[in-house]
Length: 277
Image 1 (cartoon, rainbow, N blue to C red):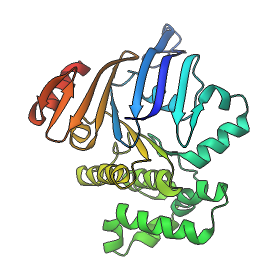
Image 2: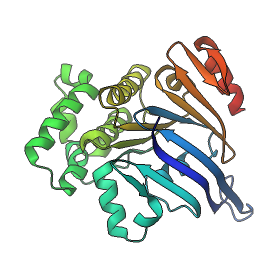
Image 3: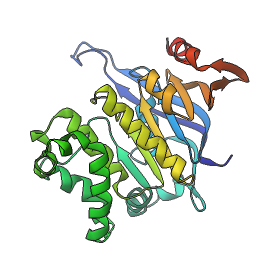
Image 4: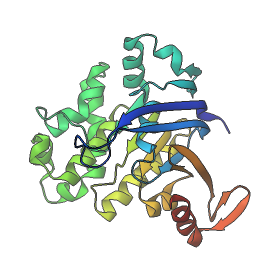
């Protein structure tokens, strides 16, 4: 099985303050790694971990939003790309992100002065995609993610509104649409279902799963704390704890494998939860 990311001896660290960040708080150093990991191409991979485990830091490094300190990261597209070489020029990083990566970040991160629709179209316009293509792509995505609003004749109103004028759920869905709008090779989603109700969260995961089923050259990596959604939809689950990869589970349709151990579906949530403790 070919990889989409190959990671060798990756490490990253930063200083942070615990608690409410008062003067009396001591500085705490967070360390990610060392990590050796291959993420499979053409799969939906979920990264699970408690708050502060390093899962968001890892996905920000994979998405070229942060520069790792040591180690090697390769991305396998039409050819293998060494991330270290991309970091040599900021313009190369920006072009690579725009052309190959789609982001759905934890808090949406939509620009407050643009409408929901304009935010979703932003990356496609950045790479000069024709407006007709942008509209066709976004129309299909909005129909999928905003079926409820469309049925209530509210979709146009939501799309014309600024981010601060829509609900958290609508905002989160807009972030997912933006991530998919430019038809990227890799979709990186950080807690994309965090502000969604159960059914909307499942619909988002179904769409992510359909992407890799319909096009095996595309890969989706979803950071989540929702063990149930990961177990139901992911092809692979990576458990991170204290900055280290603790366990990898691989799905085989009716059961999961970990270290050559067969785990029936009804027990996988319990096993993953135990690994997270």
